[in-house]
Length: 424
Image (cartoon, rainbow, N blue to C red; front, side):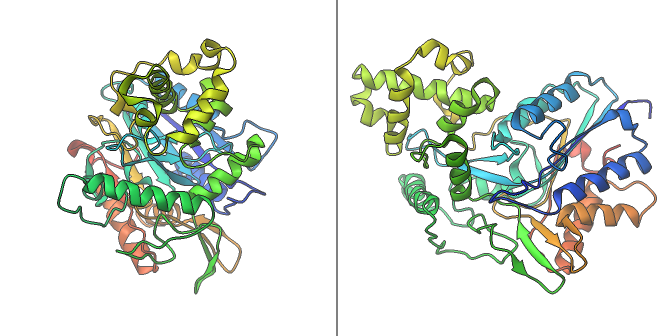
């Protein structure tokens, strides 16, 4: 194998915050040793971003995005790229106000809350040269669809998402309004949840290891130690954004705008595109097109309109420059959960399905780790020969099930990469 091997490892415990985890630094340390000892990576070709040492570069959204871009930009055919992420995941609900925008954007959560979306990952992997393999391990919640549109080889996230319903196990009602009714119901639930009021899903329930409405802040005892999950609820995300900005008017409907306001050009490309679309809608409404601003902005548009009015009091070109520079061909490009063609040289191994959460576990001896990360290390340590992507995920599923976890790791890649050796 003559290709160069290069990696980026990100571990975020969010110390001292409402979102604090315990095992992410350990996950990254173990993977670092594994890359060097088992896979022959050179220390100089492994970049680590962690919030363990506050004096070094932090795993902010901008730093992670830049490090990923550098990893891909330097790649050549025959190279092997690897990205490991241990930290929170979250699902950002639709905010355009369009009746057919009913999905979620699945995101990883950097230490500064500057979210990186599934579509950001897809666009990144599209830039990987042909003949270069890019493997992503995401030990975070809702990571089953992280590489937007990648073919699902093991798992059921794609099947769940096909309805574009935001309650994954619910079957669509008959009639053309079913998608909108589901969206309305889930939007109401999101708004209540953002206030700290939990409304249970009527059609299914989850154990303490799974479920996107689980509050990760509540540690739950198990026979072996303590378990948290790596899901960042909307309510906690909103609280942390309020603390960061000092503003109390952040809610479902203005989350993406708040992220744009805080991070500007460093925000997710998809969020910048969203802002360009919403600005266009606002101007259409102001000019009376499409029945006025209420009709244009839709049911979650009130917060958006107030935000845009305040932002437009200054220099519009300057305030929205990062958004205006984006290319957007149609409104549905910024819809939550928008899917497009899948890259064929990206491989994602996820900690769980889209509607599940991944466990952050601590043993009675005080050792903390992600359930998927621990399973991967255990499997690799027990087998000296090569382990294929499929074998690794199937063994991890079996191991986690025996340990009592309900999360089901998934494999997302082209048919050609199912039986390829893990990483290289």
